Length: 231
Image (cartoon, rainbow, N blue to C red; front, side, top):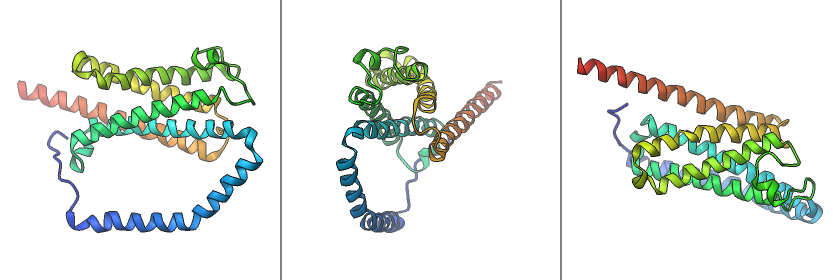
């Protein structure tokens, strides 16, 4: 993969690449937005007491998808698969931004627990792993995932100070954060029994596992090739 270089998309396809998605988005929004707005208004009027719980679930899923996306994007970046279509600094910035967005969304999800009256959480129970009133071990996995993610995101901003080796070592913690988030979602999430939720967890875990094995395989192959060249 070392020989892969940025080529970008063919400029002649620009109209198709941007035009067709824009048309499709317009059709979807035009057909669904009015009904969606009415549905939100109705839900707001009839389920005001449960809104914190609904938003808590929403931010939980957005955080999980952002964290999973960051891990997947990072693996694609490390295997140089993305180098053929995007400049590496752009890809790296997007990877960093996804991780930061995931941390922010997860933090909002945690704070909303304090507003949810169905299963009340105190500030200590939100912040301290192991003392949650609901599924304490699985909630602790999510809390640990958040703290690990904060460390990893913070390492982006001190990368030059701590050096590339230390930064890479800290970056491996991303896989623990993803594992913790997945375990947390499956064990503590109220949507776990739904088939769509199971497919999301299975799909994210499968993609991460495949790309991780692929990345390890590339690393081993590169080392063997380097050893042969030095002989």
